[in-house]
Length: 116
Image 1 (cartoon, rainbow, N blue to C red):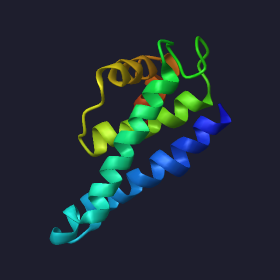
Image 2 (cartoon, one colour; image 1 turned 30 degrees about the vertical axis):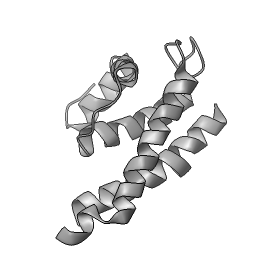
Image 3 (tube, rainbow, N blue to C red; image 1 turned 180 degrees about the horizontal axis):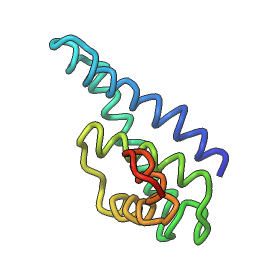
């Protein structure tokens, strides 16, 4: 699970940073430059890898929820919410499982100024 946690930060997250920077900080012409195309391709590759690692299990470690799910789930949030990109059906269902966990619900409530 450590390797998937590192993957979420160093690989998937690294390419997400390029896309987020281009979307929200780059001048108009640079929002669609060659690096953005490369980052989009690498993010889609990261999605495919995650889908393969998930297999038919509910979580990346099988039946157990781990730090890898938290790390990769954060990347999905940035990809799907901040960038507005669709997730493949299987990963959308996985993301929904992650978001339905009670601890995630409490964290989201706190993040938007509520109390939990």
